[in-house]
Length: 131
Length: 418
Image 1 (cartoon, each protein chain N blue to C red):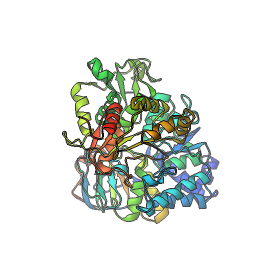
Image 2 (tube, each protein chain N blue to C red; image 1 turned 90 degrees about the vertical axis):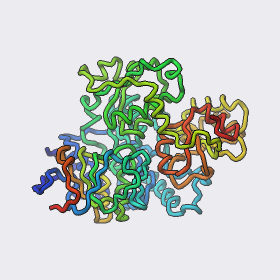
Image 3 (spheres, each protein chain N blue to C red; image 1 turned 60 degrees about the vertical axis):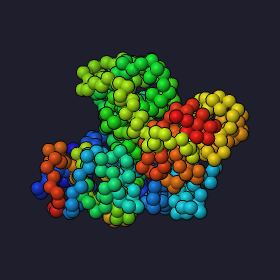
Image 4 (tube, rainbow over the protein chains, first blue to last red; image 1 turned 60 degrees about the horizontal axis):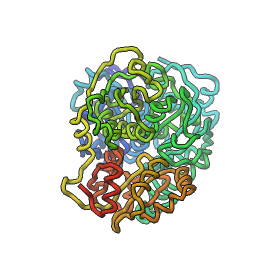
């Protein structure tokens, strides 16, 4: 983990670059059961952003929740190219990190994850390019 | 904050014991860093979800572990699979060949790695899957994590797939979260004292309470105050509903769960941060979330029970309620459970009774996720909040949440009774 000195202060849980349109999720997401790795869309019908595509987006969300299948589905989405380009979260999340690191180890492609405080989260721009 | 590694941990991280152990140690170390842990704690057993195929990555990861010399440090039990080995017609290979073949191969690999092949989401329903009070373990499947922490008093965070088997390989987890005393303190009181006697006696109550808990606390820890009794099956329902609707990994029930002899004990002597008086409205709203079928829709395609896997007691109640009657033609009734409970059913002569009634007992898997189970062609009833919650997004059929009695009477009548 390293501190970043860019316009969005935070801690990298998974290193990398963040480039893309920011999609903000109002609630935590269970990737397994709540997200379809084939289409890149949220399928949890009770999620406020049901139907939203996360593919290639900088996904800003509180964290993951629910099912224990989250790392595998996140990793699978990264493999397929239907997953987020990066994630910005407010609660340290071991399962998102496990999915991103495993995809990196197996396929040499990953999803950087940045941990930020809630004030920073509230003021994220619509598009990010960092570092 | 950093964590210092002992010689063996450093050896794994350096790859001296192979690439599989190296990746496992990397994932567990990353979990420690993310959790700000300063030490590891040894675990005594694991229940893993990595054996549940969820795409090519599941298979690639398993093949990688096998090829690169993964070894297990502790007894490691398997969660439910994507497929049933004993009832292959539920998810026919011809319909989704990649998924079914992949799932079968993943099951083979985890067996070859030395796992105990329970294939159940309710490991706590068999003696070897019940860790002792106070022991540190690895849990993964969300209802089992809730049950293990809350009802058994063993300690685990929710380790998702990939991370769960990694922890089982290195035999340790970061000392953080629910592994620590302070991490197990309730902060939110749910007082059920205002509910009517009829609401308290409603068999749906544990499922609905679980949903209320999950929707309210998210991943926090709640304590339910005012329940006079709760069976293990009812606590299982609370755990499953709370984990599905929120991210609840632990809850307390005053006077019932082991770390809550009193409300004060569950709160560790501190004041509660929040207090909710559970009302009829809460329960009604939770119930409404679980039913997508139109109010007057009397059609019925299927009844799905056993999420989490049915216990022997739940099967006995089912046989009693069926009372020798058969389910109607055209209605698929499936009850999912473990091989161990199925063996007990056979011993008691109940397997034949259920088969004669037209009830399918499906092992190794569950029915609320794709590939689409055979027979779920329209309105499906379930007595499980978890099934209803996930099925909505994953199966695309109208769902009606109802009690076991209501589900079975509807199956016999051949239509959804109102």
